[in-house]
Image (cartoon, rainbow, N blue to C red; front, side, top):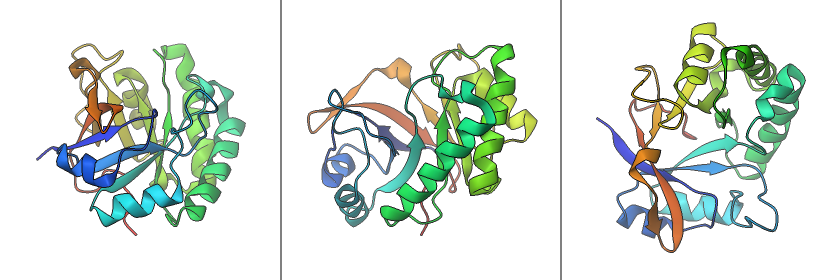
Length: 197
């Protein structure tokens, strides 16, 4: 059965507000948003608040939309950063979703897959996921270069990969939670790449 969650970059809504809005999990960024998005990055006090309110945490790495075009070396470097940062947050061993946040072409996929291979060589494939549209997610799963899949409705049309762990319903529009615009997500299996301690 699907359970509802949220992802967001524009602030840090309290765990209680997320729970009151029907959320059971959040997908949060490990990277800094700079002056324009000061609330993008997951921080330690936020982790504690979410956990105290029973909200599961999914970790996502994204700096710029097509970072995965950097291939193996980029994936390795980003996974090294992510591994260190989740440890600082007290989320040692957490899986990490890496974002293909653009309409990938078939020609792009080799770099995407190599990026995920680089990440896997640091984290282990069991901790590596991909975020993206139907084609980037499906091709990565077909290639066996990641374990988790977070599919967005964007760039997907009516296509849905039955292997996905999380679905981002961008077609539904934003939901306001404690003044923060949030995308709505749904998770399917019990193990969907959340930190499990």
